[in-house]
Length: 81
Image (tube, rainbow, N blue to C red; front, side, top):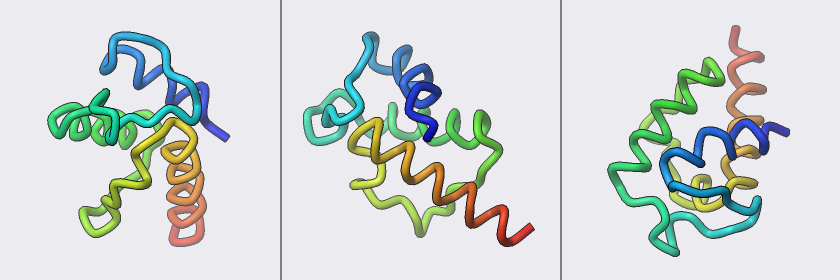
């Protein structure tokens, strides 16, 4: 999985390291503006597209859930290409 890379992307947005299962949205570590910044950075870093219809908050509430979502997007886009 891409947890280490997701942690690298999150660190400047949050201002500190986070645990893989630490709640980001529900704890307030990431607000709506930071979430948009995170999505833009994830798209650029992983070469993926995250459609608006797939913006489920539970996919972005922890480093582990983000990494799993990225893995699924990469697999979907690989199947489409």
